[in-house]
Each structure stands twice: as structure tokens, then as C-alpha cells.
Amino acid sequence: MDYISITPAQKTSMLEAIGAETIDELFSPIPESCRFTGDLDLPPALAELDLQRELQKLAAENSAAANGACFIGAGAYDHFVPVFIDQFISRGEFLTAYTPYQAEASQGSLQAFFEFQTQVARLTGMDISNASLYEGASAVGEAAMLALNATGKRRVLVASTIHPDARATLKTQLEDLPAEFVLLPAGEDGRISPAVIAEHTDSDTACVIIASPNIYGLIEDWKTAFHAFQNAAGDVGNKPLNIAVFNPTACALLKNPGDCGADVAVGEGQPLGVPLQFGGPYLGLFAAKQKFLRKMPGRLVGQTSDGEGRRAFCLILQTREQHIRGARATSNICTNQGLLALRATMYMTALGPQGLRDVAEQSWHKAHYLAKRIAALPGYDLAFDGEFFNEFLVRCPVPASAIIDAGRAKSIHPGVDLSCEKVASIGAENQLLIAVTEKRTRAELDALVDLLVECAP
View 1 (cartoon, one colour):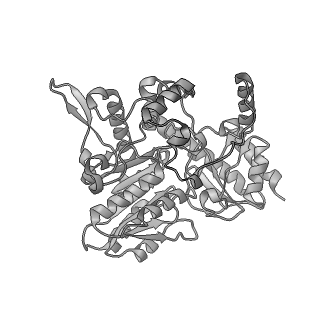
View 2: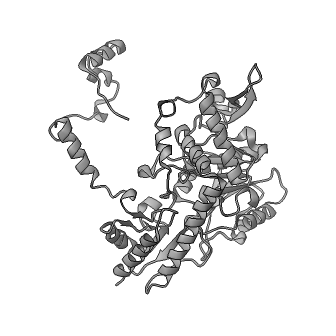
């Protein structure tokens, strides 16, 4: 969106309306110790053409995913996005529309959100979905809050193999509440075993949260894990909740959360037509069983009929939202990622069930082809032997950061260094997490293999 500065006359008019004579007076309530003084460290002013050239020069220094073969994953994936989505989403009625409080004036947006809810519910095998949340990590936190409210219990079991961002968000959200955050350690196979779940479960446990594929790309056995959890919880009080953290692309190929006994399913919607865009904003997905309808966070769009019997859409059950219930609200989240939910709706509609499955199958097959080739290289091996979807962890003979640096010179983004702070340093310096999507070609897969060979001592 273009930026146009205000004129001196407009600035004067705005200050007069506020009742201030100068900009400094406007900010006078802020203590001087907290205010910046002096001149900004900026280069001299440039003519518009010169400024454009300077900005283009700076932009060229970026190493963007689109400028090479991208194998970066860990929660954000370089999937193909049909070009029509960018064209449609840029229309003024979509790009500038405010949240649809007035249903009679927002039928188009509300219908799109209704379709989004339907698509997410079908994808996850759950009964209902909301109209999105801020991003995947927030959705995990909201799922735990629902479990605490629904069960009246206090302990939250969290698999250590969920994304570090989700884990940190959840821990922060629970910090000032009468709740206990319990981290479940992974086994040597990179998964959470049913025995570990049972060991940490008691009668005051509200839920267990398990991601599949997990942060290492491994497929967890939701069904067995949830069964072990419920058996260990017993029959004291309300039934604890099974919470599945899912990858929407994987749901098109693998068993979905609903088939595996999940009560709540949450995930990151970035793979559904949302570009990488420097790490966000992204899209939180939240689906659940019907009985949790009144406890769900965020917005829900329902279908009804108007006074003339025509199909109509409206926001429903708003009493659970903060702007209506205040301190007694189910959640602080009062809005949704409307623009990105619309992108996801367009993406899922364009591809359809078979198209989504094709994306998942290509990602799976290409990842397994690459993993097999890498495992055969001297000095390299897969960190885990178990089944994975489109992402896998490699132990390298050199630091992963060295491989990433070497790849940059060849327009290859080899993956994620698990020892870096961006993923909470959850791995060793020689561990490289590699993700493969349908966009990667055989030539790009082979080029990464060649890069790894060159990097080996």
C-alpha cells in the first residue's frame, strides 16, 4: 500500500483539532527520559528517482526464497500460490474492508468466512471451525485455554516436539493463571511415547497437546497417544481434551485429527496460499467438536435466513467475545485474520480436495527421494528413522550454518539450523532441518545433494 505524507497545512489543521500547537506538545505526556532527542541518523534527502534506485539496491541484498531453491521449513513452507489469489485479494473491497460487525453490509465477507470454516472443518475431520485466529502459536494457546475452561482442571501436558514458538506462547499465556505447564520429553526416536504421556497424567490434567508432523517432521501416532492419555486420566471429573496440532497440507494425505480422536485441532494456515512474507503475518486455524461450540475463541459465522427467506450470513454467539462479555469472555481474541483467511479460502477452492492431495503427495515423494539420497552420502545421516511427511532432520559432518552460508552463494536455501536462536536452539549445531514442497524440482533436489557433497570435509 502506497504511503503519502501529510502537507504542512494538514498537520496544522490536525494539531488545531487536537488542541496542541506543536508536535512536541502533542507528545508532552511522555516523560522526557523516554523520548528521543537530537537528529535522526539518516542520509541526506534524495530525489524520488534516486530514492527508488537506492531502495532497489538495498532490496537486492535480500536473499529471498523466490530467488532460489528454498528448503526452509520449521512451520513456514514455500508452496506454490496461484497468481489469481494476489490479483483477487488486492481488490479494494477485500483489501480495505473492516471487520464485519454489520452483517447486512458484509454479506460477501461473511460468506467467504463461512466457506473457510466449512473447508477447515472438512480438512481436519472436525465438526466446527472458527473464522481463524492470529497465527498457529496463538491457536495452540487458545486450545489450552478452552481445555482449562471446559474441564475445570489445571494441568496442561505439552509435547516438547511442538514448534518452539507455540510452546513459548503457551507458556507465557499460562504464566499468570492457576495452571501448570508440563513439558513431555521426547524419546530417542524424536517422538512422544504413550508411556511418557501416561506417566505425567493425573486426575487434574486438562489436556495433552501433540503435533504431527512434529518440529522434526516426524509423524506422531495421535490415535495411540490420545488413547493412552484418556486411559491414564481415568474417570475423575470432566473428560480431559485431546488437542492435535496439525499441518493443513499433511491433512490432505495423512489421517486427520478427527479420525484420530482429537477434541480440538489447531494449526498454522500459512501453507494455504499465504506467502512466506518475512515470517508473517500468518493464519491461525482452530477446529473442534460440536460440544465445544460455545467455548471456542474468536469469530464464528453462521448461516441463516433474512425476513424474505433468502440465505444470509451473520456473526453468531458473540456473547463469548471480549467486546461483549468483557472480563468474562472466553478469550481476549475478538477478531480474525480476515484477509489471510480469504486467501486460504481461495487457495482451497482453486485446488479442491484432489489438488490438495496432489500437493501433499508431491511434497511427500520429493522429500523421501531427497532423504534417501542424502542418507547415502558419506558423513551424512538422518537423525531419526521414523516416518516423516515432507520434512526431515539431517546430521551433518560440518555445522549446519556453514552449509547454509555455502548454499546462499549458489541460490540454494538448504534448511534450518536447529542450533540457532530462531528455533530456540532445540538441536545441535550439525543438525539441519530440510523441508521439501511441491515446488522443488528434481534438478533442485540434486543441486542440494551436490552442495552437501561439496561442504563435507
